Image 1: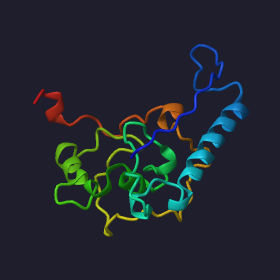
Image 2 (image 1 turned 90 degrees about the horizontal axis):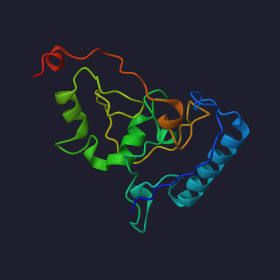
Image 3 (image 1 turned 135 degrees about the vertical axis):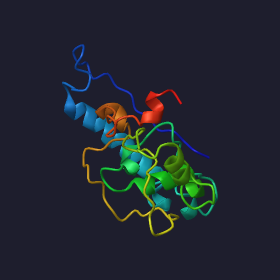
Length: 165
């Protein structure tokens, strides 16, 4: 089972300034509440829905279509932890895995965002979610890139994309 946690509020920002909340204390209060609730629900599993730490077999990781920067990003060097929760063994461990597919179809990492599938391999196999590291971004939130805006791709399109092939 995968659950989705959300909190909504009106930040009452002026038009064109929705990224700047006039009430940052209110926004932080909502983010703190949803983060504490989420961590509390999965406290027995270390604070995240890690299927390897769930003796009941109920949880099945996280749902990828709602990115959650608190789980880990490229910037905080915890992307493998987030990818494990999203994709389990399909991330790196299976013979046909997402890292190999990303390397084949997007070798220049054109489709890059804070939680995109990485191109680089890791020496160790990713299985248990490592809860020991803290987020390098103390202002991280459960809304992830939606509150911060998307990252612009670092690399220009490859020539075969420009030629229509």
